[in-house]
Length: 280
Figure 1 (cartoon, rainbow, N blue to C red):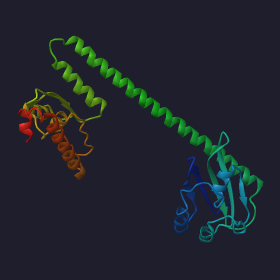
Figure 2 (figure 1 turned 30 degrees about the vertical axis):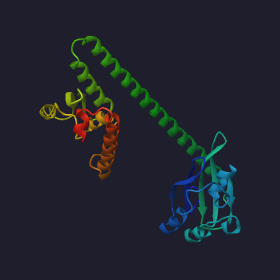
Figure 3 (figure 1 turned 60 degrees about the vertical axis):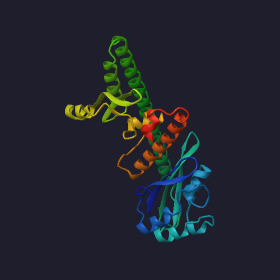
């Protein structure tokens, strides 16, 4: 804007379907409010930046009120815009956005100003591409790291299994440690049931040793629907509660428990047993 003698400037990105304003300078709040109401928008000829993206070419308008296709005349009056230069940002010939500058008086931009804005558009494409490649690289690195961590955890568990053929406790301890680490969890536990009681042979986490010991001391306990582990076992399904303090969590839990009661009833109605009697 400064080097082209502009009144204000804007940068737009195109996601392949919609155009979004992503940067602006020199526009007052009232004009911004008018401008924002038009976006996001599909490319058409009614807005100069959109026209540059649609046509993949420079749009140079010496007098915006002389362009009968332009739809943001209220914005032009409020902002003081009289002449506009919009340059598309092209990557391999495909539009990914545009840069626009506006002047407060009618008249063409100079060839030097046009070339300058084209240079800025090329630089913006390089910046956007660098960010895209870096983001893809980070995502791939995270995927590889997660895969490696999972493979390492699996190998650790298998190694412990091979060394603990007469004692399952080291296996449980390794499982809870690996689960807490891979899930970035504060705590993890392994629960076992004999069909009547629920036991906690291994737990691990950020709590103090005393707190973990206190939790484990509460087991064995009856197998019922008072714990998430009990619900998971009795309903034979995953129990996933993103936030136990959210009101919706209790509703989800209750619905799962109700479904579990019905499922248990159907599965045991032919041959009632102690489990059915406890559920009733």
